Image 1: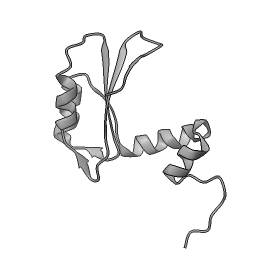
Image 2: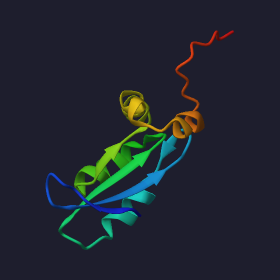
Image 3: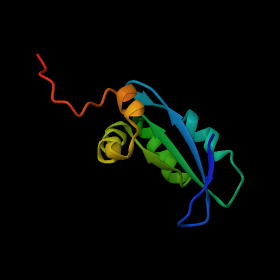
Image 4: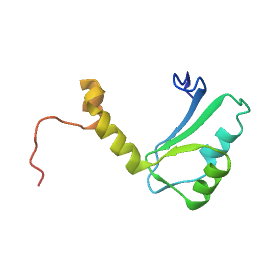
Length: 100
């Protein structure tokens, strides 16, 4: 898991990233909740959505979550900050295309 210090809070930010279709279970959240560092901000980022059980688990264990549609919105808002190679890997184009 990446380990960075959050410049705003001084906390470490530990992130678990999952690429799933459909629903993401609480498995990644359980891995994060095993972290014993009280100076860590915990995040689960998933390309899917969380199951109801996983959402409750995240709330109970104070784990922040970004789900599929939120992730897509965030990437869209930040696309100008991405390198052209990353935009290409994500399939983001600045050239209008006709979709049929």
